[in-house]
Image 1 (cartoon, rainbow, N blue to C red):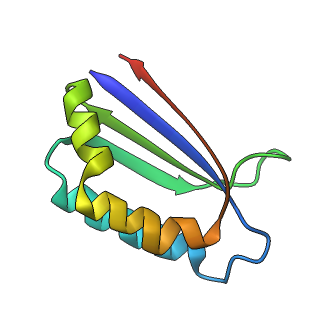
Image 2: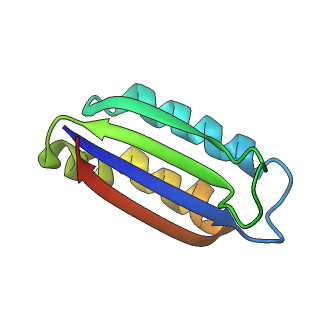
Length: 97
């Protein structure tokens, strides 16, 4: 099992509703990409200074399933249409469970 974690900092001028747009887009991805075993995401609660604004945690059975997710047209559309326009910084990691 492989876990993928991605953290996002949004641009200071990201429009109101950006978080909701990300959540809506990720909800659609969770429904359409069958290779996803588990998919959790959400906005930072603001409990610590300097945190990123949003996180995605996704589990996949195999590295090949993760690659399918990364290259899936729905995921690519999400990146282009919803994330990239509001993104300031992104970090990610994948590791074996």
